[in-house]
Structures are given as C-alpha cells and as structure tokens.
Amino acid sequence: MPGNLSYIKNEPILLFLNGSQLPFSRFYHDNIVALCYFTEKIIDDRAAAEDIASECFIKLLDHAGDFENGLKARSFLYVSANNAAIDHLRMQKRHKASHIAISYLQHRTEADIERDFIRAEALQSIYREIERLPGKSRQVIFMSLIEDRSLDEISDTLGMAYKTVQHYKTQGLKSLRATLLKKQHLPVALLTAVAHLLSRHH
Figure (cartoon, helix red, strand yellow):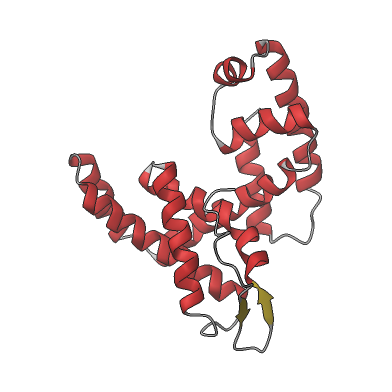
C-alpha cells in the first residue's frame, strides 16, 4: 500500500473532542489511497506524493486530540497535503509551468480543496471495491483507474491480448458501477464524483 507506516509499532488511537476514539490503523487504511491520489494530482510525482501523505499522517498524530471528529481530522490531512505539495513544487522550480502551478495552488479556496478532496474520496471508495474483484479483473481495473494506464500498456505489462484486457476492463467496470452506485449511505456529492470517475472509463 502507498505511504506504508508499518514502522509505527504501538497502535496509536485518535481521540476526538466529542469523546469518540478511532484506531489510527483504521483511519490510515480508510484515507491513505485518497490522500496519495490527491497529492499526486498536484505534483505529478507518485513517489513524492506517497512520502508527503506519510508525513501528513505523522503530523496528524502530533495533533491527536485536537479535532472535533474524524471529518475534521481528514480536512487537516488534505490541507496539510495541499500545503506540502505547494512547498514541494516551490523547491523543484524546474520550469515556468511550476511557477504557474504554484501561483494557482496558493490561491485555491477551501471550496477548491474540498472539491478535490471529494474526488479523492471517490477514488478511495472505488479502490476498496477494486480489492474485492476477481484476480484478473482486479489487476486490469487497478492499472486502468488507479494508475491511469492505457489498454495497450496494460496488455504489454500483463502479457495479455488487447481484447482480453478490454473484456476484463468492461466486466470490472460493470461490477464496480453496480456495487458503488447502490451504496445509498454515501453522500450525494461522493456518489456523483464516483459516477463521474467511472464514466471516464467506458
């Protein structure tokens, strides 16, 4: 899993101001993929995004007990990741595009971050369901949706015929749509984001 924090030996517990408690490992598992995705979309560097995500979780532990609830803790993660991504781009300073990106990110509103946060959570929901797919479909869908690879790239990597990869992708997407869009307990905004992400891969 990206951003693995297995070196934390004792199980930390997140304590919220409303009196509830949550095992850190569960909170980490529920949010790490989305946070990595969110960060990678800003800096376009998967390895660096995973490092930033891990650092944000460490920072979260340093502030354990400061949050009203889990939603506030997640907001802290995304704001921290957004700021760390800006710092990362500023240090890179590779070309003019980086300066343009930094200028844009510095002026993003909370609504902008919230929109990307919802998109990342949608991907997290999709990721959870991908893990439940049968072997070959799981591989193909993961590489297509999560890694954003083309059918040709997947075919070459897995040593499968193009038509076979296309079949697994079609069946996998059909299963994901049927499962995810029936989850009525998910917020409407999240379901909408899930539907949009899946519609891009048909």
